[in-house]
Length: 361
Image (cartoon, rainbow, N blue to C red; front, side):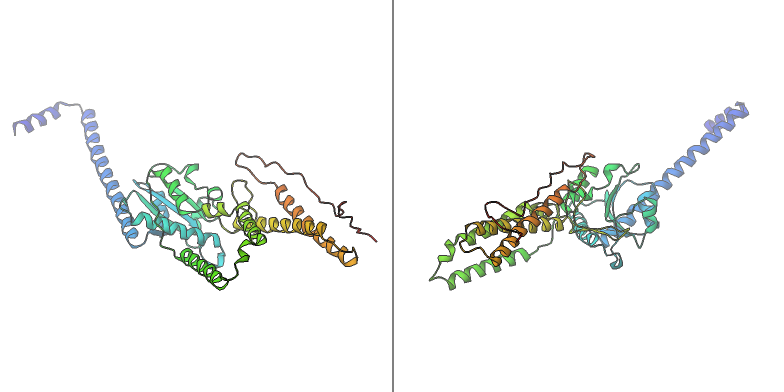
């Protein structure tokens, strides 16, 4: 009581300006404390809502309003991975569906792991549900993966390089670890198709060997082993192993004009269709060279029928090789801002001296 009386008397002796300043400071402290508490309550509410959605579904679907509230607007103490896509059938985006499957595998691996926490959330924004978000971010292609950090704006590295790396779940997990320090071990659902295919192949080979157990001369057939070796060579030189590791899309359809690209424009990536094209061209060139060799070593009179056969054999080697050199001569962007060195065009003449083929009568 005596202390309160002394404080009151002390305030009476203060100038009016000092009293006003003291009152303003007290009001400011009260307001700041209330604002901080309000911000903490808002953050807790947002985190609780995101955790509730994550418990129902590993990937949270968002529209424009949810995106602006939970991803863009502060306060945030969590990271958000957003997949911008177009999954509706009328969009005809096959790449989007393939990327979404890998994204679901990654999100499920995080959701059911022991390290799951409220520091990272996986969301998805479909173009037909959030076109305003695409316009806000000046985004005109899909699919696209972006990381929104807890503080600040996304940087260039927060956009996943889909064209160069591919959209495999393992590659996405590595990128997320670089951006958020959250390490996710990818768990894929069991796929028995490979095991079944291997079992069928072993059964077929075993059945064939059993039926031909009295005559196994075909095992020593050089032509058969050569064909098998060529198939392996064609598969490896066409980039099938790269496709298996990176998981690129089969082709790319431009959403603006609908044009389908089968050849990738960068030297750092490729489409699956590109591997198939190169495989067929390599096989055609090899077949043409084999036919040319057979024509040179075959015996018989040279007549009109033989002349036509030789022309077809030469054409079967000339045309695919010319097409292959054209594919290599296509300008392809490198990761360093330049173009790859173009190979010189190679033409195989239609008249080869050692065959002595008369093309004109």
